[in-house]
Length: 572
Image (cartoon, rainbow, N blue to C red):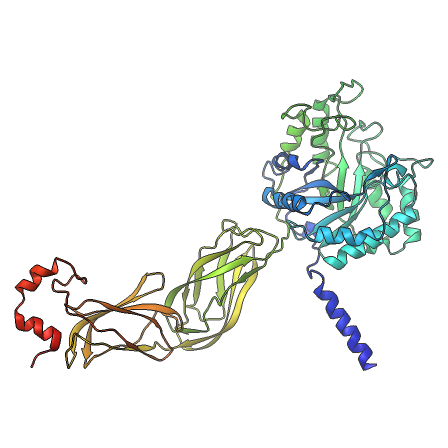
């Protein structure tokens, strides 16, 4: 029995190694810009961002389709990177491909392939929204057949595979055609859902939200005030219908909606004018879509330059200009969305060294790597901070901009605790009320150490001297400290109470003695007493400028011979 239990524990542990351990978040628990748009072509993303992130908006939504014959990793990674840079939240609808005039039925075995592909995408926000195919109550969308039972099994299988890969996948079912009637090649949406539920009672545990196609039928031209099944308000009917099957309050995504307009490839006077469509969008936004459970509304369609969707297009045919309803939608008052995003960072070295000197202020540099899915933008209220020292401990630095996967060095300044002792100090990035840990460890704060420097002044038997100067430089050639008027006694110079150094780091120590050329050494200070031996100082700096040059000759000629000899070998 104990071996069996041990095996189960091992299997559970291994399962966690193969997946991300994040989880979906409630999209309505954060500031949410519900406005979005449906796009067919990724080249329209910039126009989409201008539309949905306008008028105070940020992080709007975009519905986009990925087909199973378009698994081009580099292409889609670049598109997802553009989502992030344009502040667009993708609602990714899965699609198969067309055979014999219908979209093929996805196979259960395809679920792992989809999950593996989608898990490699650089998703811009924490929730990874995935829509499981399209309007399966149409035979043409499901292999020329009506099979709600089979679709429910696909939902269950795909949800399971996606969630095994990452708990951040937010699963949405296909939007149903709410105007379809039962018979022939279509099935009433309510009956379709009922058969799904009867076949798979656990259906609603496989989804995280509800997806609605709320079109103003008949003819995609009905009144904005119409309500009920098959209208612009179909989602209200669906919301009531869901209460028969689950007590789960599902956030709502209206991923297709909108009116056809008269100006397509061919003018159709039976359709609404673009101006009337513009008024309809304004009315819907301020009335129908003004509900607290709506996460996103993505009208169909931003740009389509030919039949059959030219009369839905927001963009004019053969032009970079747009119809009036584009501008009406753009001018709607929006809010700046702030979706949950995945931030994680790592550093190449300790931020606070293991051993530091009390009360010291020093500069260091580490490499910071962005291993999350969101960019580090220092202009987006990111700051460097620490905890665990005393009330004088500080950590300051200017953070670099980092895209996901990018690594850069950055300098920062530390002020050590004023009192010696042991501290557990944590370093983190602070952003929007959250702390992202980058380093944590024990830090030993020591009293200021000292240094003994052995040196020779010429060939003097007793190299004692007054008024020596010690300069302390960082490895980046920055002057850190200057110690003046130090006495050299019998060839030894002592500097006590060194501050603003880090034991174990390299420094350049320069010793200046009047009339002698400078000497320097590269030193790693210890935490107590460091002993240094300098090379011999030569007394060739006759004019006192710290170097040997032709300007030393006039000064040499003005010196008395016994003074010069004394600097070389000392006085008798």
